[in-house]
Image (cartoon, rainbow, N blue to C red; front, side, top):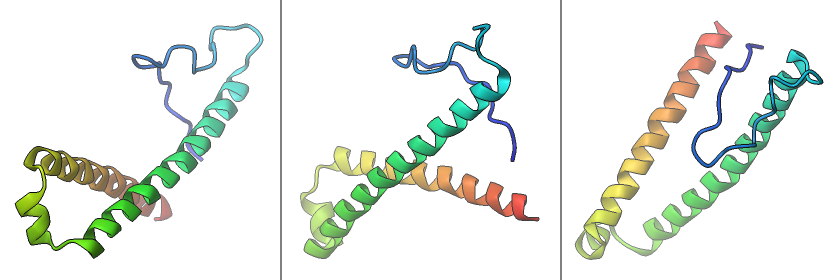
Length: 103
């Protein structure tokens, strides 16, 4: 298992990471906390992605692509397409790393 990279909280995420400078925490407890948070975040993302997939399936089953293009808001469709593309690239990079790890 590889170590988690050291990350600092981004905007709006202050206080969500352990205080690494605390004398009470050792590196292993910080690492275990980070791993637990990662697993929790992955589980939450899995649920959200499944919800998004269900929403897309409902659209796909109820409307033709032609109707979606004709009557959908172009800006909303472009944003949805961009989001889907970003997700695809992100998970493709994870898939590639998983394949490299198996070698």
